[in-house]
Amino acid sequence: MSRLGEAYPDAQTELRWETPLDLLVATMLSAQSTDVRVNGVTEHLFEHYRTAEDYARADGGRLEEEIRPVGFFRNKARALIEMGRTLVEEHGGEVPRTMEALVRLPGVGRKTANVVLGNAFSIDEGVVVDTHVRRLSNRLGLSREHDPEKIERDLIPLVPEGERTLFSHLLIFHGRRICKARKPDCPNCILNDICPSAFEV
Image (cartoon, rainbow, N blue to C red):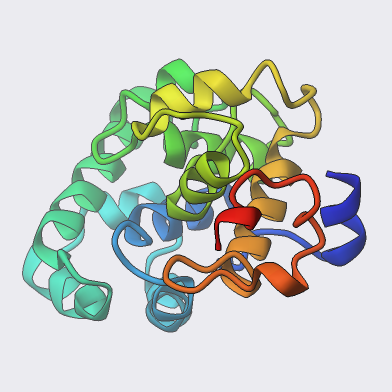
């Protein structure tokens, strides 16, 4: 973490957001998509949808068209509307601050809940395991699992509470810039002397 921290001092989520609801929506939209594509959609989306009630009352067809570029837009639009209704009906329109409550929201799993808790509320309950964290956790020998929840269980004892959100950001930055899926740049990797996979390339 110290090496990655020096390499990526500005590591943070690259999703653009202002409120916890914005971040929740952006993270839901990011599944099977890129942050760049999501940011392009949310730039306009957040101008029209400012509250949970706005999503709860949204016209499904219109919302589908507004989020179409991120892919899986029908399922995502349905999840956003149901999420908005649940927030209004059960949480007074506010995004809850517990893992238990967040994962009960339509369209929200542990990964999304960890993103919201860690970045919007500074609650470091777990570790965000996206495709980059999964890949690097395997390559670095931190976990042999492939299921995100099992990987998270392996990582939690290794990463001190209070640093778990940052840990995910650091791995994501490194995964996007150096330890890429198809062609990792091992010669220029600052972890190549301690990474068990570096010597296989």
